[in-house]
Image 1 (cartoon, rainbow, N blue to C red):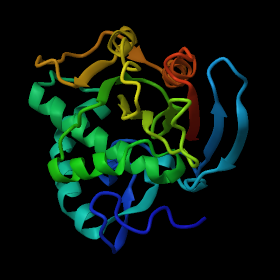
Image 2: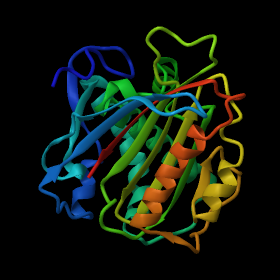
Image 3: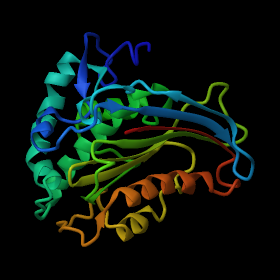
Image 4: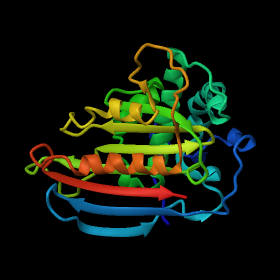
Length: 281
C-alpha cells in the first residue's frame, strides 16, 4: 500500500515516524493475543430514502501480522511524536491505567479534560489508517496541535468494558454530509464517529463540521443509557463509576447505531450522504 500521508497530520512537517495506535506502555497490562490484524474498509453513497449506491469493500492499511494493539501508523513527525504527543501520553497514563485495569476511581474535571484530549489525539491518528475516511478537518488537527485540548463540535464519552473481541479494536465511520445543491465533485468526509476499547476502558468520539449541527441532539441521553459518561463537553462535575458495564455485543450495537442514526436522518435535513467504514479485529 502507498503512503498514508506525505507530511505530519498535525504540524505539516517532514521526517515521519511510526506512532503507536495504542500506547506502548499498555502491553504490560493488556495481553496481545491476536496473531493477525484484519482491517476492512467499506465505502458507499446513499441519499436517505434511496438504496445504497457504489458499495465496495477493500483491505485497509492495518491488515498485517500482529495484534491490533501493537500496530503503528507513519503519519506524524518525530518532533510531534517525541514532543507534545509524548507529553500528553504521559499525562494521560495515570488516568487511563486504573480504567484499563478496571480499578475505577472518581474522575475530576481536570482528569476528564486530559482523557478527552488523549481520545481526540487517538481519533485523529487512527483515522489515517485509511485517509479517505478521515472526518476530522485539517483545521481541527491544527487547532489541536496548538492547544492539545478537546475541541468544539466534538462529543466524547467513556465507560467500563468487559469483553474479549473488542479489546484493542476500533470501529470508525467517516461521512460526508452535504446539501443536495452543494455536493463537491470529489466529496470528502466532514464528520466522524469512532468507538474503541482497550482492557476495561471503552470510549466513543463524535465530531461534526458539516452544515447539519443537529445530528448530535440526543446523543448524551443515548450514551448515558448504555453506561457511558460524557467527558467532553464537561458537565463540570466529578464522574463516578457507571453501574452498567459494556460487553462485546453492546459495543458493536453502539458503533452500528451511530451509523444507522445518521443514515436514517430525514432527507429534509441531509440531502446527500457519502459514508465509509473500517474495522480492525
